Length: 86
Image 1 (tube, rainbow, N blue to C red):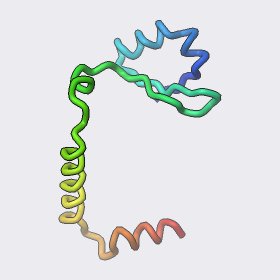
Image 2 (cartoon, rainbow, N blue to C red):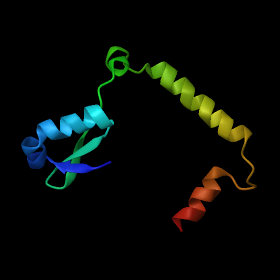
Image 3 (cartoon, rainbow, N blue to C red):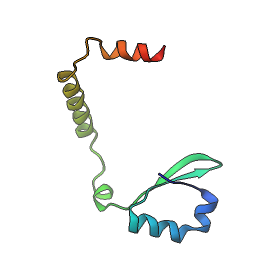
């Protein structure tokens, strides 16, 4: 994702919005070099249907169960993470 500073965004707002609309580009908006927001194309679906926490949790549980069913390593996930931290 391209990054754009807040001052530059103020100067080039029309151009940036056009890029977002026409090319579906997402921008990371920065302030003093630190990310502060994401500018992304508008989606009526996302606005009208906020994420359902229970549904999101159930999807996560399903994904974790799927990983567990397909786990082929003799090591546990915890053991792998511990090895990576060393």
